[in-house]
Image 1 (cartoon, rainbow, N blue to C red):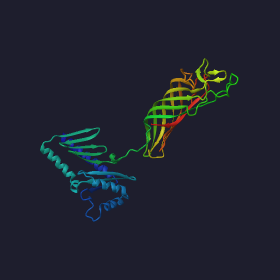
Image 2: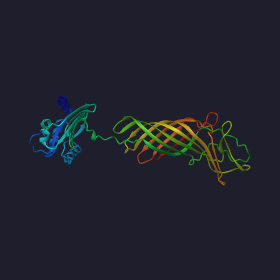
Image 3: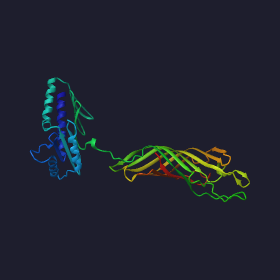
Image 4: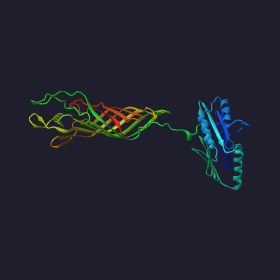
Length: 391
């Protein structure tokens, strides 16, 4: 029964191979030792001339790059057979490179002889049929017929006959990857309309809005672990859905000497005075908010060597982790620190854009669509951040 199964498998694999060869536009065989085209008869032409004639009969052109690949395959220091498979336009070209003309022409006879010899030597044959194809093992020889070709192993020597494109020669596109550990650093700002309040004491300095920030002192930082799924991928670009998890910090540095605090009816600002009408100067005065954020970033990824490597436009949702204030007096160095929710919204959402450019740090911009404070507890101020990706 095993013998019959083996014969059926070999016949099926041979028929499949012949069927594949019939579908190919062009099938050529080269004698590696003599560097001649098999089945071409005696000719004084060079191998390249014979190949050009064979290509032209099919309306194809032998390019210099393909000729160089053929020369490399011929010159490879190996006693085994090899093959090249390329697509030119809509035509498939397969080139088999054999170590000798006799070996290529007598392959069927050799296989029959080896079968007879194995029977005479009494070696055990093994045939296995599974989802991964057909395996035929005879002593130290093994043949594996799969959906993409035939693999024959004899000792350490392996011969491959590939159907269609040789997967070992296919190169994955070198596209930008928004994946891994990312660190973002930039500046903060506030948008919104703050109502003017009258200064309650005489001789006070000109009115300065409570939410005036120091441009360079208000900083943003974020650390993210990100990944993506491919929605569509081509040779030069891909459309992907990025996602991740990050922790980010808003540090709003106020450009005045009033300290923000949590009042009974909402957030309020108050200043300390060394003398009537003389505010205590502060060297540092900030409000910090930390969030746990889930970014969702649909993006286009391009080749890493292109001028624009990625364009991403998406959004994010966040949950507030902590809020605190910190103020340091300029002259005395006294530190005032308070941890409170300051009526900050527990949830945040907004829009985000990212750009990856060649020879330049990756850029990001985020804008909160939700106000920082709860309704009625503070002005409708919204945060925004912009900067670069350091990792």
